[in-house]
Length: 340
Image (cartoon, rainbow, N blue to C red; front, side, top):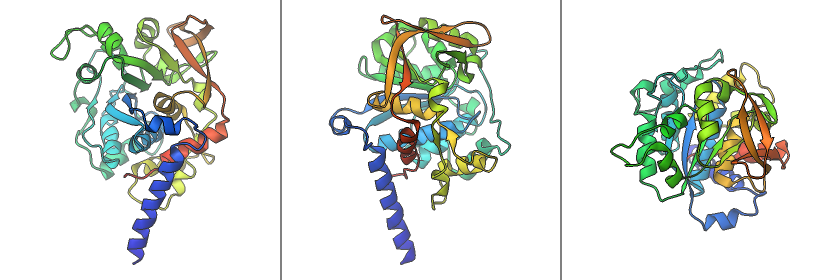
């Protein structure tokens, strides 16, 4: 009887978290429920920090609510544990067949987690996944080109919460078996916008930009669609994960990653850099953020960036509107969502 009660309780917790995740502060919720879900490709560097795990949990929670269709989940990081960790999360949320991929071009970045407890080792050891190591995954550019070619025109949102490596490779790609269009033209035809966790505004130096400066330079200068930047300063003041690690559930890789890293510190929660980009890519920036149009500028080979306000600029940057505390509540409710 107690086991049956626990199962019913966990089901109710999942339903409640999904309901709250859908946004009591979101007046556009009912309108979006009637519209088509966002067609999303997630590009992540899964591993140096564990906010990618929370961001993927948010994405899957919103997919369960019908707000997003996840087309692919790609690693921009060559570290061998990245794709296995991505697959762990996709499988946990009952989407094991989402296409994955990783960079195959020269250069690029391989960065492991800097936490003492190597959670990127722990998750693949504890949970099922199909790909043994990142280098076994398909070429991310091929996955991009295949997925984009199959989608309606001007319909795909790309959310990048890692390095710009894959986007650079896609931009420079040649026609292939999936499309007769070169990369730039394929992007113009199929991609609606990019939402990126990158940069520090109005001026600064940020990890995702400086780790692969050559790719950052090409993408930030030559990408042909709008890019919405969720800068370091946005997620840096939104702390999540404290309630998550207190959940009375077992065999949850999202909780495990946060609990393992929280043991080293972060008593008030972890910063939510990647979560905000995923949130805006799916839900839009209204009513959560103001935006300013302008131009992203990469200033030097060390990855320093600046921002030039310009009403005719290609890019937008997020500016705080809803308080960090309120955003933390909404984001963490999604992070605690249990699989359907």
